[in-house]
Each structure stands twice: as C-alpha cells, then as structure tokens.
Amino acid sequence: MEQRLTAEEQLTLKTGAFGAVFLVSNAQPGMLAMVRESFAASGALGDASGVVKEALTTGPLPTLPRDSALEIESVVLPALSRALEILREKAPQELDAYRSVVLGAADRVAQAHRGVAPAEAAVIDRIRTALAEPA
Image 1: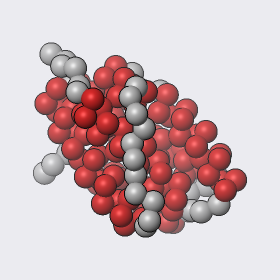
Image 2: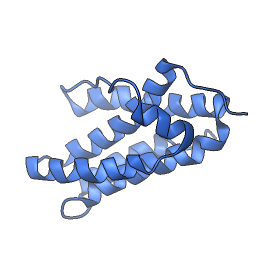
Image 3: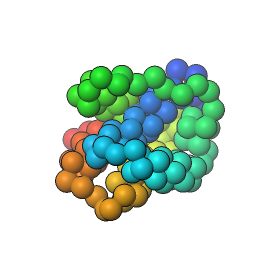
Image 4: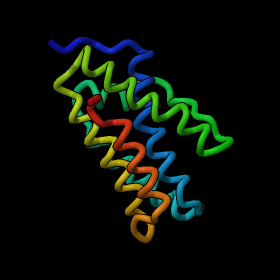
C-alpha cells in the first residue's frame, strides 16, 4: 500500500532528480546548451506520475551547492540513494518510475546539445550507479 511522502521526503526525491539534471547539464558548459537542456529535462520530468510526479512538481525547489561538481555530487548522489530507500519503504511500485524519470531526464539533457559528450556520459554512469539496486 502506498503511503504519502512527507515534505522532507518529497524534497529528497526532487533533490536527486533535479540535481541529476543539473550535474549532467554542468558537465558540458555553455549557455545555449543549458537552455536547450533545461527544456529537455522538463519534458522528461513531466512524464512522471503518481507519488514521483507529486514529489517533483510540488513544494519548494531544492537548494544545490554551486561551487564545484564534486560538492554538487556529494549532495545529489546520496539524495538519489535515499530517494530509493524512501520509495522502497513507502511506494515500492514507484521505484522503477523514479529511476526511469531521472535517467530519462539525464539522458535527454545530454542529448539536447550535439549528442552525449564523454563528460556527460561519465556523470550519467555515476547517476545510474546511485540508482542501482543494492547488491
């Protein structure tokens, strides 16, 4: 049975999802690219449904560090792992949807400007690892 997520839990899901998009977008700098990428990501995040959609479309935007990619990753990757724990406990049927939305958004962002650059592919691999089932 699905349980409602607290505001804090919703923010964790949002931090992971939006942060993943932000990481991929920042892997290949460029203002025009960033605009195209943000439109691509919003389309993918808009494909969510259920608890995942509610978490991604309500409440405040997450606050992410802006100083360095490593600092951003140190917040985003644990948020992705924690989001999976939250969903496993409260809405296990939404796990695959969350993974799919986050990876889909990350991939759309990478594809939005001249295909996937090696730096973007490396970031997506780290995101995919954070979203993997524990062994």
